[in-house]
Image 1: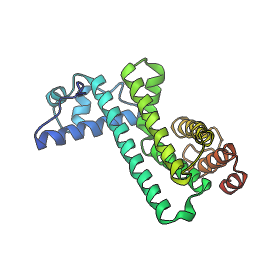
Image 2 (image 1 turned 60 degrees about the vertical axis):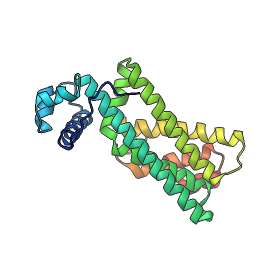
Image 3 (image 1 turned 120 degrees about the vertical axis):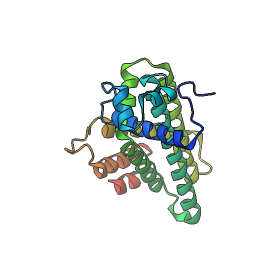
Amino acid sequence: MPNTLLTKPQQKRSKKSLERLLNASAHQIATGNFETISVAEIARQANCSVGTFYGRFQNKAALFHVVQERVFDQALSYLDDRIDEFTERSTTHPAARTNLEAVNFAIEVAVDLYTKHRGVFRAIFLHTRSVQDPVLLERVKLFNAACMQASMCIFETIQQCSSLDQKDKWRNGLEIILVYLRESILFGDPIATGDVHHLPAMEKVAAAMFSAFLGDPESAQSAS
């Protein structure tokens, strides 16, 4: 389906100006200034003209959507790379195919993902919760589904012949943990570490919770 929000550039110079516009906008979204900043200021920060902006985007809302789409695409590409890394590692070192290894890896990837894009993800989820935007809601839904699909790849790498019950347990457990990590990193830390970026503490708590949910006391103890 063609992207009607963006007029794609053909020339190399135009592609560079588009990249600058997207980077400047992502920064403003991440810092919470996007709603109040003017198109002229975005163009100034991107070192291009207002005419260049409107040559690419219908309005600021269209730009917001394109930045969101770009961030989700980058995040999914990162997920694919990390899953390939885990699969290769498990193939090379079969002894590493344990529940604890898989749990720790899934949590590490989630933490890295939400931390790397913290500002933009925060803005996206806040926007989703406050504005009934059907395009964004569908995009978030697809993104969450892709994340869960990636998590199942991790599970199936270590347990090739698992029952449906085991798969459901992994999926449900990780969904709970992902919500915990997302809310902790994006909106504040409910385990009261005193620092929203106190990631090692969050990772340990999440790993212990997840292992306990899976019914693996040894892994839960190791994770804690």
